[in-house]
Length: 103
DNA sequence: GCAATGACTGGTA
DNA sequence: TTACCAGCCATTG
Image 1: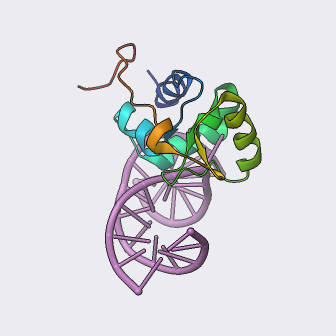
Image 2: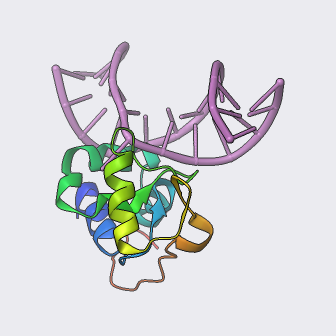
């Protein structure tokens, strides 16, 4: 399974009204770091709910803040001003449907 | 094969 | 609260 595919699958599994940080996804796929996740999103993000992926401080991706905020509001994601309230919105990946490279 | 590039992070000021 | 900085690592040229 490609790194890209892992990241995209992870993003797709974030439920509406929730969000998570790049670092969370990076840890989940168990490979690379937040920046690698960002690279994947920059290339293939348009195929997944990218607005549910935000920075660790709760701010959406660079240059897409307005777009992301609008979508997040529409989904009822907990926001605190112009940032996602990760304290409440953070999605804890308890999933069992995703394969990891090495447990 | 090496150097540059990021939709980033966490610490410190 | 924001600003700056060193570290990060798969992908790209």
